[in-house]
Image (cartoon, rainbow, N blue to C red; front, side):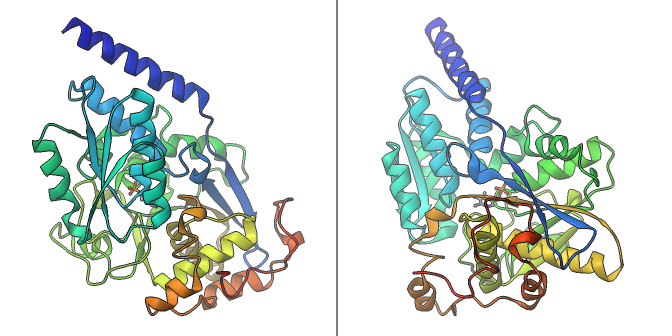
Length: 373
Ligand SMILES: *Cc1c(COP(=O)(O)O)cnc(C)c1O
């Protein structure tokens, strides 16, 4: 028992050290001339050490398991994931010297599978994306500690503060002209991010509204509209990390003010537009968020409302070099090379290099209309 407590103490110390070494993520400002008086801010969660917003979640899930006495020295750790969480969890498991098994859909981007393996994790690939939960429980019954991101994300995060994403982005907004955003836009995978942001906005007494950007036909959108926790997706999506086939336990409908459904092709076009504007690659769900930000901005412009909109950049684009960034891969799945949807064309046609505030913006006046392979 005492050696067990000593191990928990050393594991907590390792997590504290990691937190001290990690810096907060950037909040990038983007001014698009097509939207006068509306400032866009993009929270760059790809800049975490493990490349996605799941770095925060993985740290919280390990803390939660440790402090609940569920995680022991030498114990195997397991979780179901569409990949980003698995990479972050594999990284933390290695930090704590624990074996890690990731249960992932076989269709997960190959680069993510390779990243988990490179971090010493084992990948248990299942054909049916909806089967990952049962498979993770199967490992749990055999003695593994199930971090259970889908069951616990919304609980494991300290939404009142303590370095949560909402506290961070609002503190970064404090000195901006419209410090209280009109909208915050995020996706829903575990639902942890939207629950944390929605709760924190209320906790702080702000008027900011929360919009979830969903792949068209996914379960969250349908469940939120009908308040039905048994809702399922009517379509699948190629956007990883969001667009779940079922309403996950961590989806808190009540704190979400609006849901915008985005077609996959438009999310991919949004992803390319971000590369053109920011000079680096982000994943598909960042594109989904960006399209939703532009739709909200178009509504504000039509009503002559000024203000700020904060969206999330969720993970690094390099993970999708062989999938979402490959024209051949998209064509195999019947997805045409991305064409700018109307709102994007409208938003970006007036954007020149001088029109953005990002000085490192590459010398190109507009984003590519078709992806590189
Ligand atoms: C998990 C994830 C999301 C959604 O975040 P949740 O907090 O799980 O709802 C969005 N994008 C990517 C790439 C993700 O991995």
